[in-house]
Every structure is written in structure tokens, then in C-alpha cells.
Length: 359
Ligand code: SF4
Image 1 (spheres, rainbow, N blue to C red):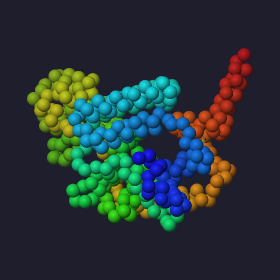
Image 2: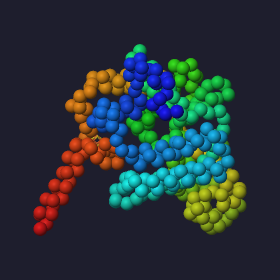
Image 3: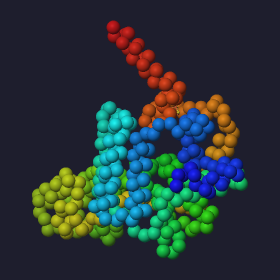
Image 4: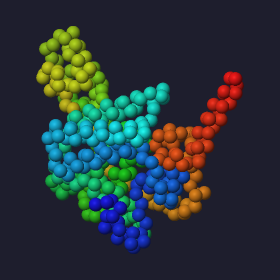
């Protein structure tokens, strides 16, 4: 079913209710002018590489769960093919990854390497799941916030666990709270429907977690990017918690090969079995503090839209000079945005002036 045609949403629209999404609420913080183009003028803009490839991975994972595909070779094949097709299509349509600081392809290469290895290692989760579950949070009689939960696990005790696939990098600092609001919103909407929410988490596709039992018996874990996870645990392989009967030189050679192949499979079994590698699932604390913060945020953002109304002048641009990366790489409106054009034109003028100086 097309998302826009969901009967529950249709019914609310017919009653004249205001329906927001978390993206719409967040958009005001990223750039009010972008929010104006998207949500007042109704122009969704161009997709960027992250949104397009993220969407492909989401759709493929949804298919795998919905169809019950659990054989690792099949899941790896499906994910890898879709990923590669998506990357090819991006190239054909001229949508590129952002360049790194030196104008090179490090960002692209690292992302593809992480996702390719994720595809190879993906194991379909076990249990009862619903995918793309529509939730609608009632803020007031007039205002609602809707969202779609990537993966909802129905636990044996009747509680539910909320999971969101993420192809982005780890959340740090304020970004963690911002990202967490989406999960908390889902949980609150589910609770309005009568569910009991057990936990909230992101499945961070670019990362794995390696765990091992230390000499003191405690479990240590290290979150690593998939593309070089063996290199990141190299010191622990060279000094494993349980000593192995391999001389230092030979161990060094064996571990060097494992690092080169980015795989633990070739290690002697006594060493290999000390380390467990799995997909990184990052849990987010669901407590009263984050609930209050999220609900306040939602109320304030809705009020901000109401205060601004439909007039363009009430939606100023972000500070382009301060965050031109966002404008150039993440905003789907940069081709039509006069503020970004102005910003870019200052460079053209400067280049011309430099030429005049030179000649
Ligand atoms: S290009 Fe920058 S200033 Fe313009 S709409 Fe996009 S984010 Fe806002």
C-alpha cells in the first residue's frame, strides 16, 4: 500500500487534522527555508546519495524479513545485488557521494566497503516481526505525528521492541538526542495504541561489535566499522585473553593475514573461538527524561510551524557559509535555493578576481 494512502491517515486528513512527520519537524532545525520549500510549497527536491541508497537497503531488508529469507547466502546475494545496482544507478544518474577533504573518494569507498561487508555478514533476525509499521501519535485533538517503524519485534511476553535500520554513522553528542526522538516518538505512539514497549534500538549497518571474555571474566566489547574490524581488534588477537600455543612470530603472521583479509575465519580455532562478531545494535535508553524531552520538542516544533504560517519570509535559510557541506551534499533543494546560489557565486567572483590579480 502506498504510504500516502493509508486509511488511518486518510481518515485524519478528511477530518481536517494536521499530520506531521518527524522529518517535517526536524526540517525546521536543519534549515527553515528548506522546510518551506518541502512542506509549504510541496516540492520534495532531489534525492541525495545517502537517502537513495539508504532507501534501497531498507526496502531490501524489509523484503528479506517479510518473505522469511533466512539462508545467509540468499540474504547476502539479495543485499549485495541491490546495493551494487543502487550504486550503478547513482553513477548513471550523476548523483555522487560527497568528496573527502582532498577532493578524493574516501567517503564513497569507505561507505561502500562497510555496506558490502555488512551484506555478506547479515543474518536475518529470529522471532516475530512486523515491518514498516505505521504509527500515529496524537499530540492534541488537532495535531498528529506519523511515522513508520522499520522493524517491530513482538516479544514472547507480549511487549514490543522497536528497531530502526541506519546506514549512517554513529550518533554522538546532541545528534544522539536528536536521533533518539524518532524512536521515542514511535514508542509513545505504540503506547497510545496499548502496546508495552520493551526497548528501542538502531541497527547500525556500517558497524559490527566484537565481544570477548577477558581474563577477569568480564565481557569486553568493541564497536568497529565492518570494513576493517579485524585491524581494529588486532592488539587483542596478538594478546588473546586465553593464551594460545603459537609462537610470537607465527601468531604475528597469522594475525597479519587475518587483518589483510578482514576476516577471522582463517585463524586457528582456539584463537577464533575467543571472539564473537555480530551486527551492531545500539540500544537507546527509554526513560521519562527522554520522553519529556521528545514530547516538548514535538509540541514546540508544531507551534513553530503554526507561528510561521505560509509566508516565505518566516522561513529564513540556515547560515550557508557556516554549514555549506549540508547545503552542497545533503540538501535536495540546493539547485533552486537562491541563498546557496549567492554563496557559490562569491567563489566564482573571488576566482575571477584572483585571475585578474594574476594577469
Ligand atoms: S541549500 Fe542550504 S540554505 Fe538552501 S534550502 Fe538547502 S539547506 Fe537551506
